[in-house]
Length: 212
Image (cartoon, rainbow, N blue to C red; front, top):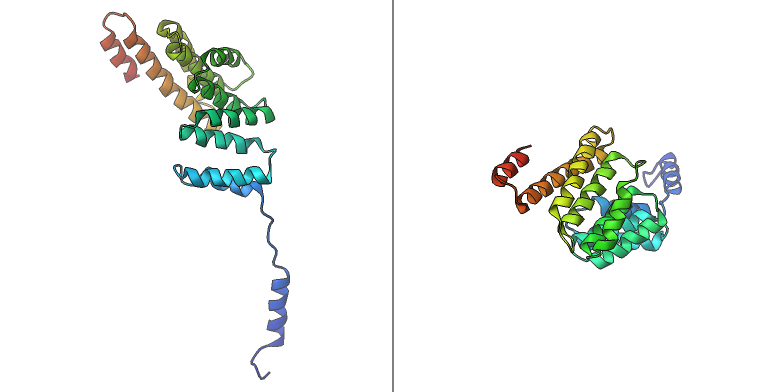
């Protein structure tokens, strides 16, 4: 025709436009972006999670991720509130339990944290990686709490090492990573407990221990 436009091309173009659809905004997109954005871009992460909360108030992982970020920036009171909310929504989630336990200790609530750690460490149904982590935390609370007792803490850290040594063979990447982190922390805690004790030749003992 005069305009040089083929009728069939016009029809095809119109058909393609008619089929164009946009997905509705949902909480999952903001949750995912908050999880994978730069680790230190705290403002953006919190903004994304706030939007995710507004879109879906019944998603516990939104509150859990907020707790993680608030903990990283030192807002422990707020982080504990978020972690507790996540745990209320999903009370059988060991990841949420562990986060809440750690925040209790960091918030100075040692008595409640020690009781919680003792109860969680006895949960034989949990994966060894989580049992190792809470057992390690239990020992650390005893060693560094209101009435520090490094000698009483050491058996818990030794038990944590035993559990974590088994857990590093897990087929799940997240569990292996948690187990390795626990091994590192438990070994350091025992080194500190040896150093704080009245052992003979403890300088040599600490060096050999850390060499493991």
